[in-house]
Image (tube, rainbow, N blue to C red; front, side, top):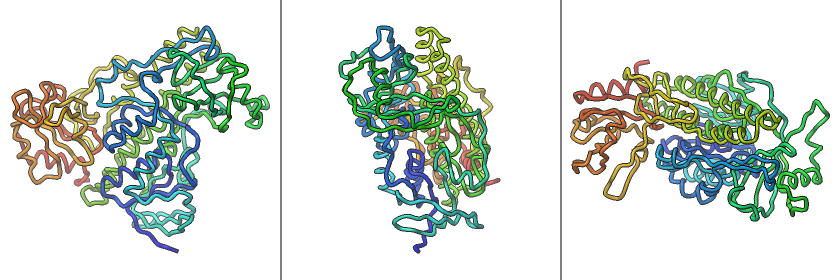
Length: 529
């Protein structure tokens, strides 16, 4: 049997595991990913890609490819409510693209998971060892990391410093570690019916990413903007219901009732039973093993948060593992993964439950249709949750400023460079066209400072990428008349941004100091802990 030594073993080849492999490889970490399935998903289980995830895809050079494979924003970032897709009472409301778009160089997009996984797998395979049809069958924690047996076409004994478990809601790794989950009982037993039908006869005002229908209760999701769709409905085991009830005839009946066309030509593509649930693991780490994605937290599908929250887990964890593996950080840095991500997971799962409760009230007739639409449309805009969360851990150096006041923390995002928050997006004018401040970040530490502040010289010899940004006087290659104000900086200010795009440290206005910057880096990287 072959023996392999790698820095990180990733278990699970869904979107979260693939993104972990991509980001670890960007940081120069030798990575092996194993996935027991023989190929990527054939079912579009998730579709919504949030703004923050699209920012990561932009950084990886995948934004254009994802958008080409997805659905037009203007048509499909909408929600509909009615008796059926063709009923006279059907109404639709769109996401507030103009309201949210200025917060980022990109924006939320719809790309079905089965298509997205192909894109991510191709990107991961370009820099990591990715093996589908290969399962983790044994794992043991050792004094130097983890020893694992993987079986497939090329069985191997793998020795790694760290293991990332992205093996889904029924995580075998989590179970083997004895880590439990917390949350309410399952909300429902669900069936997704994927089908192919030409719904081109529907006018533009009936095209939506998601439509909640009441006769009978179900939801219709757009999978592409051409022929593929899904109907989601449920069954009650307490009433004798089971997945076996969904015969071909029953599925065709459900699809035609949802569309409202009794003789609609339909081709069934697949039927998938699943549990609607919401829970969070009691721990995200056990020694050298880390949980990410559905292995760590499961949200209801309402809001489209689950996959995205998991991808943010991977992005948060990868740079920390790399820093420790490369000897640039102390082991204490890894303690900040759970400290930072678990509170975000808890909040995300709770918000998905709120969305599910609105849906339940609507389906049970306890909300008038107009009110149901208003609430559903309001909850489609979630930039406050997606972009506005902040970290409070040893990997952040507070600067004593309070967080911004936000009227609606779910919907509203107030950009700030306060330590712990995602660095704000600001367009900068450059010689080759405009550049976002976010384009200057990762996979390194970045120091952004006004031109002529002196911090560029102070950072010499330190492991940061320092960038001077001018105002309107042409003193720097990149310029914006407002960026320093938006980052809360005076003429001699500077902001240190972590590889994951969150502010680590900020001097609002002060004499440049190599020692201060070096101390901040040492604190963030746990060199003194």
